Image 1 (spheres, helix red, strand yellow):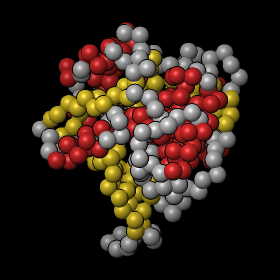
Image 2 (cartoon, rainbow, N blue to C red; image 1 turned 90 degrees about the horizontal axis):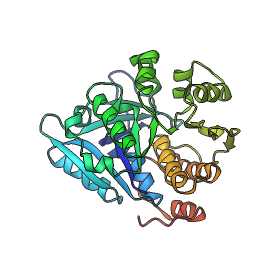
Image 3 (cartoon, one colour; image 1 turned 180 degrees about the vertical axis):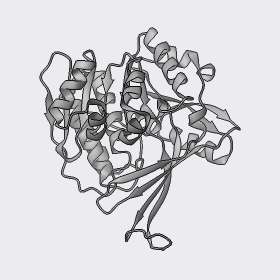
Length: 316
């Protein structure tokens, strides 16, 4: 199985103030600089869950770009960087509140400049699965590159997944406009969270969101992430499956959805067992929310969670 993620590779600046920020004021807090980008984060967790993983994305020339690539490679991901002098590697500011929920400000870095002619055709044509995030669809470029990548991979027999985050960007783009982009993709897996599913469907109850998505994308496996309420998986022709969340306390939700997606796809693409894949994914996401950052170094706890589901990661 050759897994490929195409999209954003960036740096995350995580900030969790000890007290609420006031205009013109100062306070202390927890700060962290780490590798980020939704597509790169998901690739990291696919690799950590034992799946051979590749990544394609545009990166700014310079030390920060080089560090971003080497950081992702250290996770066991084979990176195919497309270098540019036009713009620096992207930076994302994540403000974490006292409940662990994050609000994000994404700088439009080099990853937003990817064009179709820069895509590595051989890498795309050799992929068994291609993953995209909505950050590759909100603006053009890189929208045409993402759509072209999906078309090339599908023509070569690959399956396709999409994470439609974020709900605010869907609303800013316009629901109907964003749905028109989605309708050009023949995806096999859709992984929205509650807010994104509501923005797409206009429904408020989870099962109603799921039914709407299944009606509009009948060939896709819908994986609806519901935070502390767990996940509902809707496979075509099957009854919805619910898997409960873990009881991990929330420290920082940054990257939890990406971690869930990487673990779920890694397991499901090999096993075709939705329940087992979801059970692994909630364990991985639960571990991530209990720590500060999306790609914190692995410890004995996460290795034990992976091993219980049949995976032994090479990462320390």
